[in-house]
Image: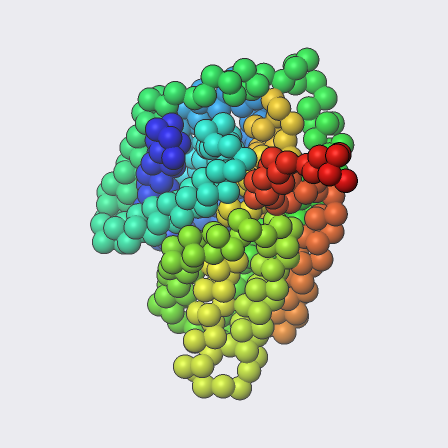
Length: 422
């Protein structure tokens, strides 16, 4: 990696490290520590998600017009203010307002960072760059959560202010690191769309491959990420008899699988068509849902049910490690010059919608409709495979498999036989 890419990756990892201090404890903080109740905690979490849905439609145009750096600096400051505000909030309106500010700031960081990674990479190095970002972000979240768990004390609200203060500082550290980044001059010129931003969304919707990728992305995030802390955990507790501590182990198994498998699968992913890699993830997740079905609906021992449930999370982690170097680079490769920010923001918006709808649908099903819940998301996983193979027909050979570019260059450099020898 070049110096610019290294700094972007370090900043991204440190911001995730800060977020890890608060994410596992947000519900407990609002509902119990501030004694605002479960309904208030639900509203706060909803405000966090809704703020992201409000700002993301405008983020892409801002990135394309101004470049990702000023957008990221603004978002870092906004997120830091929201984190401090949430740590100080003692009433429901204050907590909701602070959560909305924090949600808006963190939502904008994602497409801004993704665009900076695109600018600092080439088509050949982009796969590894996004794999590295995903690896470091998960590592940062995990370490932050572990340290935060040692600092926090539910009997002392000021200990939570310390957590939110650390999160705010990490957002400012991200901004400070990004200020030292020198972006490639050639790409800065491409940041401004020719003819302004008019018709940008119309052009995106006219890109049928991108539209199909967004539909596929919604199903991906709805069927996996949208179930982790809602439907799947409710199903584990109600149907499989999983304890709260075992849920923590399952989440740790997910993170551990990502950390261990990320670079092990990278060579496999780089040499295959992206559409087929995503299709394979759908099959892996189908097996994960079958394991979850065995855990809750089978007739094995509690130890077998626990092992199957933990395996479900581990298999999801394996699929995530295959997606991270596949989907984000594909979004960038589908974007025309000057619209990388818009494409990243549109995909982030689709992800946020899935993460909002997923728990709302999966939570009640996982808690009460155990059999239908497993069957529904097993079918969604198989749907991922179908949609991915369908998307492959829309992609150019280079978009579907960037590694094929090297073999084409070698073939073209081979001398043609002379006409006289024919």
